[in-house]
Length: 208
Image (cartoon, rainbow, N blue to C red; front, top):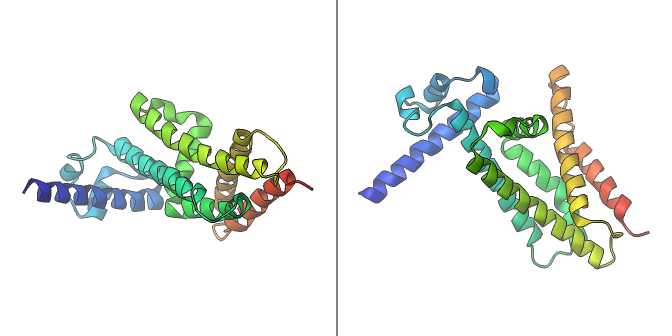
């Protein structure tokens, strides 16, 4: 019975988070309310507060879930057997776009908070966990860049600097394309522009 109750709790929590993602995407964090999220999840508002203290905690849970996915996907990408480092780097734009497509609303908000140091209001343990996921993802990118350098495929640079550069391109492109959609919602240029920018980074570091 305990196992069944636990599964039911996990299911309700999942439904609430999925509903919150939809409401945040439609209305934005500032205008979204717990009542709207409860309505989308088809629960009473009181049920939401059994799982999340407030809207900020719910949003933080979505952010943590996204960071867990990012670190997991980068770990799997870097660990692919049978692929050389340049083949893996060739996959990098598609991997970044996959991460964006998974939850663009939360990703954009996360990048904005990082840029404005808005994460400082979070609990210290939450920040430490988010940073741990970020370090794993960045470490995976650095390992692939280092492998390419060790094989003489890229000119020698600090691999962490290369990983930082790739992530900065990703962050900047996402925020820039998001700002452009404010003026014209039809604009969807992230994927080709991101691929071009990452390709130029790698080509610029390649041995001639």
